[in-house]
Amino acid sequence: MVAQGSSALKLSVVIPVYNEQATICEVIDRVRGVDLGPVEKEIIVSDDGSTDGSSQMVAEYAKNCPELVAIHTSPINLGKGAAVRLGMTYATGDIVIIQDADLELDPNEYRCIITPIIAGQSDVVYGSRFLAKSKGIPLCTRLANRFLTMLTNVLYGSHLTDMETAYKAFRREVLERLRLRCVRFDFEPEITCRLLEAGYQIHEVPVSYSPRTEKEGKKLCVIDGIEAIYTLLRCRFSGS
Image 1 (cartoon, rainbow, N blue to C red):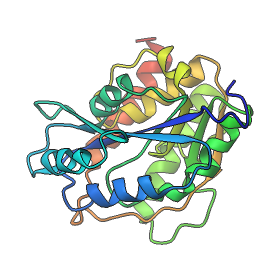
Image 2: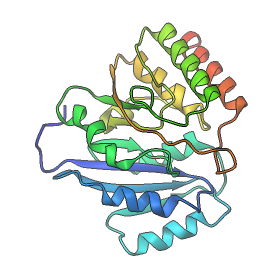
Image 3: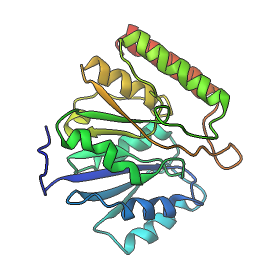
Image 4: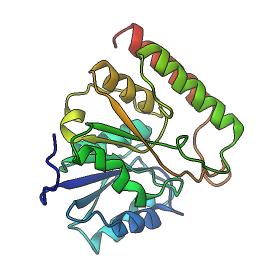
């Protein structure tokens, strides 16, 4: 476990990016502005072959704070899972958290997310959007998330409320023990399955959520939900 109160702690923030020119720099600003006391931060932007200039914007941004912000770019678009996995390979922190490049989740909630890990209470923490009252979540989103989370709980005997949350935090050693292969949004169910299979208890804390619309850049679609169901069943029954 990570020792409580250690001044040497570092948090690696992995930000997967694909065509988020409108928000990526503000997200980085918000992450930089989070006060975590003695916990250091490093920001790892993993660009998944953006075509809108996101990569160039982050590269220019990083020139002003190279000790804090680094960017790694894929030559082609593979998917969120591939971008997260790429970013994780460069993480050097004691704790790793995933931060989406939109403005749906608030980096100011990092402290409550990583506190159970720092305190030695858990190795894995998810920020649940449904433990707190979040306004504006479409009914279809609520129902889809409820179904996928319920299926996860049935298959693995867990008690999660938000399997699909983007806010997932881990001790880095935990990630090094997992075998991950998904490259799209099916990364979310896959990493949850692998954690539960490995015997990790996933601790949830409430986080706020401000969902954006498809017009504003939301990338999830029906096929991603189908892939999530397939991934849950594949991981549970095929072992692959």
